[in-house]
Length: 268
Image (cartoon, rainbow, N blue to C red; front, side, top):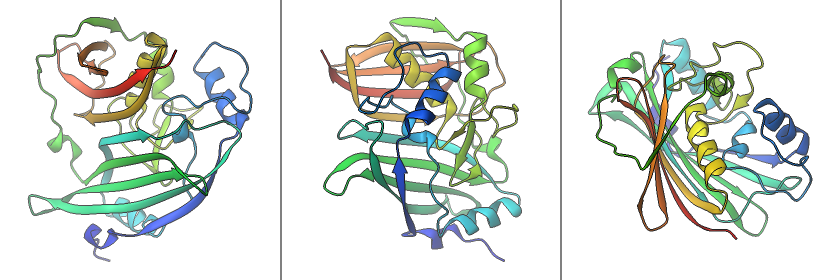
C-alpha cells in the first residue's frame, strides 16, 4: 500500500493521562535523583510527562506501514509550553494531533511530520507541545552535525554513568521506536523505560533543573542535529538574554549534537 503522510494531517487521538506516583518514583530511583519520596501534589520535572505513552491513534497504522516499508522515525525538533505545573496524582486529558506532514523539498522519500500535543484538565490548558519527526529511509543524509561556534559561560562533562542511564530510555512515539541522537531506539537493553520524547533532550533538561534550582521553566525549544556514538560529550551553557538559558550537547569534534533553549522565571 502506498504511504502518503500528507493524508495524516488533522488526525488526532485523545487519551487519559494519570500522573501515577509510582511511575515517577521508579524513574527517579533509576536515574538516582535524590530527594524526598514522591507524594501526591508534587510537581513533575520538565520531561516526566513523556513517561506516559499515548493510546493507539488513527495514525498508528500508517506509522507501522511506514516502518514496514523501510522508513525510520527520528526526532528533529520541538517545543514545550508549560501553562501550569503538572501535578503528581492528578488526572489529565492528552490530545495528540498531526498538524502537518510535508515532503521535504518535494522529495517523497523524506517527510517532516509535526505532532501537536495538549495536556489539559476539564477547565484549563496545562501544557502545550509540538514534536517534529523525520520519516526517511536514510536519516544520516539529513543530519546537520557541524562545528558551531558556541562560546558557553560554563561547561560540564557528561559522566559515563549518566550517559549510560539516559541511553537506556526507550525512545518512542505512539508506541513506535524513534531514533535519538544518543539512544538508537531501544538497542541498549534493559530496563528500556518508555519515553515519549528525546532522551538526549532530557539530558539537557536534567542539567538545567539540577544547576538552576531557583529558575522555573515555562517554555523549552530544542533541535536535534544528528546522531553520535561519541562517549566524550560536554554540556555547554550560557544566558543569552533576559531569562533565557541556552544549553548545547557537544561531542569531542566540537560539533553541536542537540540544542535546548529554556525561557524561565524566578521561583523563590
